[in-house]
Structures are given as structure tokens and as C-alpha cells.
Image 1: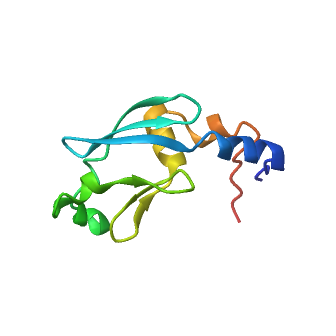
Image 2: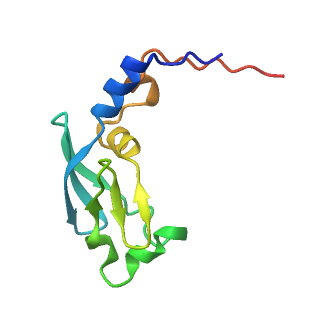
Image 3: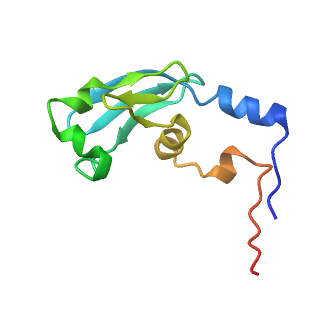
Length: 109
């Protein structure tokens, strides 16, 4: 059974996930700052060179990161990462930490 968030809780969550600052660093790392004040460095080196992220190895593509209007990160070639996954990676929080109303009870058929 999955408990859904009410619309107010969901909007509060979304409002706290916008990236407001990004600075590319050596080693496929990014300094990020979110609109709730959380900031720090995220290591994305495990993605570099794999699948769609192979473009990061070419022509300084990784350093061309920008913030979209929706507060996500984007690179040339329409490669993007959502802010919530980066927020969890930075803070070490789980979806359950960010969505206290969500419970995951597995149902086996």
C-alpha cells in the first residue's frame, strides 16, 4: 500500500528542491546550493563516461552545466538531472525522509 501526499505537502516538497547555484568542480563534482539553504559538493564521477553521461568526457561538456527554469540541472544535448535526486545524494536523506507521509508496504501477488 502506498499513501499519497496531500497537495499542500507535495507543493512544499517541490518548493524546497530548486537548485539556485551550481559550480562545476574538478573530478566531475558540483557545488550545489538549494533554495532552502542546503549546500555542498556532490560527486558525480561514477556517472562520467557511462551511457548518456559519456558526453561529459568530451569538449568540457560537464563544465557547461546550467540551472533550468524549474530548478534542475541541464547539460548540452538535453541531458538533465532532477534536483530531488541530487538533494538526496547531497544530504543522505531517503525519499521517506523527504516524504514522511509516504509508506512503502510491499504487496506480493
